[in-house]
Image 1: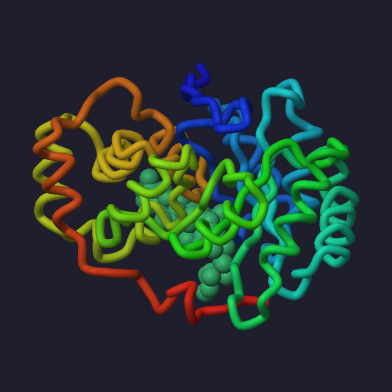
Image 2: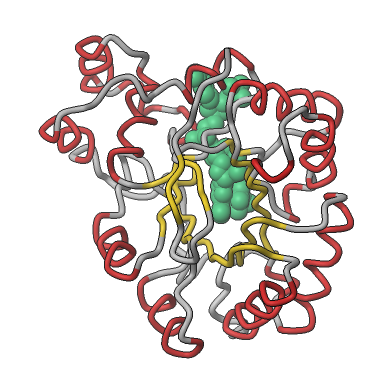
Length: 278
Ligand SMILES: NC(=O)C1=CN([C@@H]2O[C@H](COP(=O)(O)OP(=O)(O)OC[C@H]3O[C@@H](n4cnc5c(N)ncnc54)[C@H](OP(=O)(O)O)[C@@H]3O)[C@@H](O)[C@H]2O)C=CC1
Ligand SMILES: O=C(O)C(=O)[C@@H](O)[C@H](O)C(=O)CO
């Protein structure tokens, strides 16, 4: 039986899932099968990017699935080397071609690359693509509060989503509060902190046992209760189901705080003021 993953409404009136699937490294036939098994399990939000080199696989999994296309939310991202108005339009048309779809449901600017100075032009291109119906919702990724403020002031349009690094080691309290104030949905990348040493923290095991869930479910549920959409990546059908099956329990506010108290910083040096990706 498939899991029902609840949805929320973005600031532009479009639907968005409370948990999605990260697809980084899901490639080839095995990647298509993994994305297909996630759709079968109940996932409706898929996260890809030009730079993952798997838009073809994501589009193919959507086409092979028996799920209605309109129920699936496909996210892609414009890479740094395609910043600029005309470049972003061309990049998006190429993504649509590679995906084999006629619409990207949520299109993001992957990294702001502030030294290049073109994220506002790139964002204006996203707004034009939305007018044209090629993109349904416009968003950003790895934007700081200052970059979001500049974007909103320059265009009058708050992004629907800001996808940022977020996990118990880096809960992003200040940025989440800013998002809430401006109606921007937070989306968590590397929501399991890439399933590294976070899972050796005693509090994770202790609380998972107390709630009768797995440590991974505890962490996914923590994101949901913070009001952020996590996109855990898993190639394994059983782990995909485990990660999505988090809507039958609730963590107390005090225990949410205990998990947030694990805060210590980013996983690696991905400060968007200085880290740039092309
Ligand atoms: N916008 C941006 O700049 C960025 C976006 N992203 C997006 O975020 C997504 C998720 O982040 P990612 O960095 O992949 O890391 P995650 O935090 O999602 O961790 C993924 C790892 O956890 C393992 N895993 C998943 N579920 C379980 C489970 N239940 N039990 C045990 N192990 C598990 C996976 O292995 P296995 O597959 O074997 O299950 C994989 O090794 C990416 O795929 C991508 O879509 C990521 C980084 C940056
Ligand atoms: O996964 C992503 O979206 C990224 O931006 C990656 O490139 C990420 O930055 C990474 O894994 C770098 O090692």
